[in-house]
Amino acid sequence: MQQDDIQSFLERFFIATHCPILERSDGHIRVQLTTEMDKQLMNRPFYWHYVERIGAVGEPLQLSLITKRSIHEQGEYIHFGSPRLHQIFSIAKMNGRFVRLYEQVFERSVALHPWLHTNILLSYECDRKQDRLLSLGIHLISGTIVESFYDVLKEKQWGVTVPDYCFTISPLIKPMSGLARLEAFVERLIASETHEWADGARARWEEDLALLQHFYEGVEEKQEEYENEKEALRQRYEPRIHISVINGGLFYLQAK
Image 1: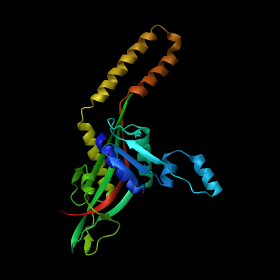
Image 2 (image 1 turned 60 degrees about the vertical axis):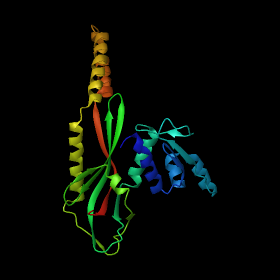
Image 3 (image 1 turned 180 degrees about the vertical axis):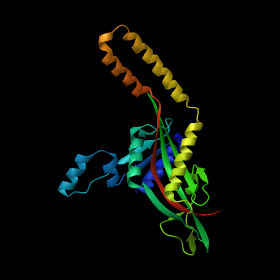
Image 4 (image 1 turned 45 degrees about the vertical axis):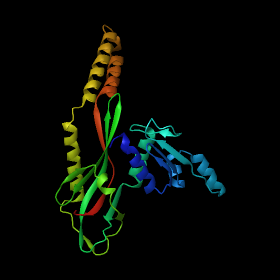
């Protein structure tokens, strides 16, 4: 998932949380929040406490978000690393961690195959930070893994029950085993990358460490302060990658 895909994610999020989309263009979206989404997103606890205390009907706010800097609209610019996007990720993770849906097929005697889908957030962290969102699906019969799996799901119609005259195929791979396979896939993906960002962080770390060592040359009585500052540099620059599953689901699709 790249910057251009953020708007698609936002639209799916607000549709799923029943927030009407009032305006939509390439790089901009304006939505009418529900009461629940206003409480979770807009940080107005005193307003809602007052409204509920007096028995009045509250007025949820509208939210205007921009995903392209070139857009000349009023709104909040949202990108990977922005607090607002991480807030929405957290809400999606909390409110919709797992679903089970069935493709709505209008034919008779169609077999629906189980797929496990997960949205996984990779956070590349050092003195800088970059996020990457993966949408992965694994076929729980063959073990086939598909990247950008949301592109498959978004073209389908879904329901919470098996369509009439259709039947499901039992998974040969259990969902937890499928999740373990996806985690192994992500680890292999990370291992295959070149990680120039980590090399750059280590170079900046060495430069600052050399300056620190030069500053403390011959200062024996401040050894503890030196070690504390050295540790602070390590915490700031040491490259690390956090992998977290935002949400996922079991989706039953026809084989074709």
